[in-house]
Length: 483
Ligand code: NAP
Image (tube, rainbow, N blue to C red; front, side, top):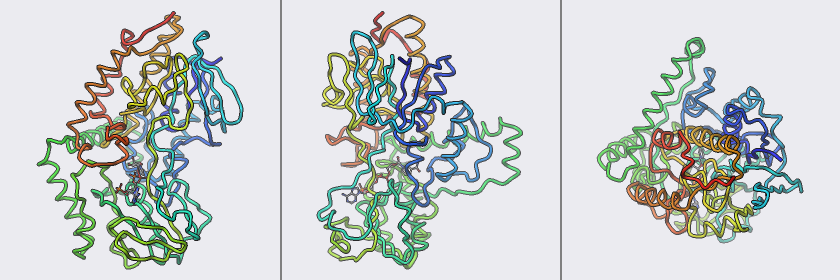
């Protein structure tokens, strides 16, 4: 029997493990479905995969890295950083690889969680911590004729590196955060790249650059400089948050104009400029950062079709504008199934109630971390904790420290369980929903930030500092504790 079982070794899972250790809790294990750590940074290996948050901020505050090569790191360097952190904090001995969670059940009498994995293993733990992330079920929409395509096809998060794209005609459906990163890369070798866009995105320049050796040496020698630099980036992301408030129309106009200038700098063809100009307010979907996407669109071997897909055929596709395209390879950059939360997992709480039943009218949590009816269950990167403006690692650190305090509280007080009070969840949800109404995310009919009923189920409507303040100290009065 363990004190805690963490599911997943992405940034959140690693952070959680470190915070437990810092609280003096060492009796925990981490279940990882794959044979290496890394979560999304292990799975997304598409060409050009990188982070759209600068690494000085997209890294742990307690583990600054003076050796980032670029301001915005590529996937291999991020994965390397995670492996370094896992080694430094001696997390590997805690990880059980190739153990994919299938179900978890709260055992009322024993006050613990019984956890099953795909391999048939069975674990028992006082507490159960989900760190499975929000974006790990690749989404390939049910396009008419999808299974008829005879060429090679794959999703961006399941990149098939055995297939060479050199000299081939490649179709890409989707042009958001993943698409804009790999399209410029594949356009370098493919004969032709045809992008099938359904909606345009707001894209700002990254102005990426390599760090100079002297800069790395300087911040390595004087770590406080790295801290100042991190804080400067964090303050800038706070500026971006202002764009996400519906009322800040003037600021949005300034940024939208900036985007238009940026398009026109690289694209001279008026119909293409029009196709690339979004018809919704900036920030309503994730704002993208790229130095390479628009220049790639100006290449003669890249074509943008802006009417979506009508039908996929054995040798290509019929685009929304009625044009027919023969393709050798078809790549889906169509995002992830982000709903419902904890999808595919059979989680039973008090009285055997499943999480699907408890959340049939929406995933109602307190701080995105706990939910009534599921004692000793904690979530990282849970419902309404995603951001549209800053580093998610700031949220992961706040959540991990909060959960570690809860578990420490359980131990110190000799409580059998902690369960958030229903009235606490209700009050939190009321305030959350009223704040969400003031955010720009409401102004598009669909995005992965929203669940099918139109509720914004993924994002947090505040700044990272505010969330950190709210989660700094656990108020055990918010919880029912059973001795
Ligand atoms: P996404 O943002 O969900 O975008 C999916 C794309 O596929 C959109 O262009 C969407 O068009 C299109 N699409 C979906 N269904 C379609 C359909 N039936 N017909 C035509 N087009 C369709 O997915 P993503 O680009 O993989 O990014 C998901 C999230 O992952 C990001 O928002 C971000 O949080 C994360 N991510 C982060 C990074 C990073 O650098 N940190 C990099 C990649 C991804 P519409 O816009 O019209 O819906």
